[in-house]
Amino acid sequence: MKRLIPFLLLAFLINACTSGDNPVPLEITDAKLKDYHVISIAFDSKGTAWLGTLGQGLIRHSGNSIAVFDSTNSILTKAAIWDIEVDKKGNVWLGTDDLVKYDGSKFTRYGSGHYNLPRNAVRSVAVDGANNVWFSAGASRQGGLVKYDGNQFTAFTPDNSQLPGNLIAGIAIDSKNTVWVALNDGVTATSIVRINGSKWDIFGEKELGFNPYYYGNIVVDKNDALLASINYGLSSTMVPGRPQIFRFNGQSSQIIDLPQDDKLVYMTQQVFVDRKNRIWAAFWGDREYGVLQNGKWELKDIDESGGIFAIAQAPDGEIWLGAGKGIYILK
Image (cartoon, rainbow, N blue to C red; front, side):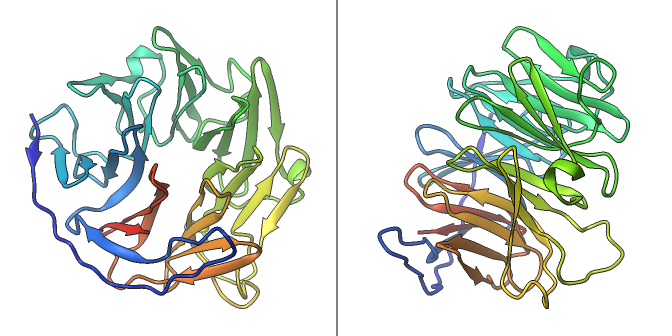
């Protein structure tokens, strides 16, 4: 059911930056799959990389073996694979035109009829410590958040829960099994939800101390604080000085400054935190990605990458960048 494809290797060097005992991986040694637009990345416990593309299917990358699953050899359509998560049993969950599971031998599609919501693209997927799958199934003023425990789907909407909106930008789960959800129900109509068992907390402009324009994605750091990127893609004006990334611990927020952000215009695509608690970010423009360690940013550019759309860390510590023209691996 799979087809194996050769891949091209392009080796080039970007100067590495080290700090103390935790060297930052900034040396790019491989550029792979340059014919694929990669927008999501996840790793399983064996180190196999699962790559979601913009309409080109799912890629399994294991060592020198690459397999592509797409509309010609699986139930996948040509829809984008926005997000990927791997659960404790090794099932690969895809956020695409529906929720899709791959168990290593077959794909299973879970359409909106399973959870009785209008059909919408699944743009965010997360797995909690009990192996429950949380995913978005919303758009402007319809749908919401869904939890799947392996047997039953539970849908949360503004009509049946404390969810303050429908359009979910991202889901993240911390080490205490707290579920964080970012919502965009319009420009500057944004909110953060924290779900801890049956307790729901809603955070908006008053709690954050400012009003985020539009959420990009969210992640949690090693201290269980939330980090969020802010997306200005819908803005008609591009000006410096706008918040791009912030940290929120449930009580107060901290805007993460970027170099010369009072003078330079940044367009943040993605934020990510690695296992050393370093903050990574992808940007649209000349500065395509960067890493923050010990209060200092190291910004880099990659020639002809097509832009950086996903960041993930492999079990061996490598940082993988999903780009418009393939995958870049930082060692």
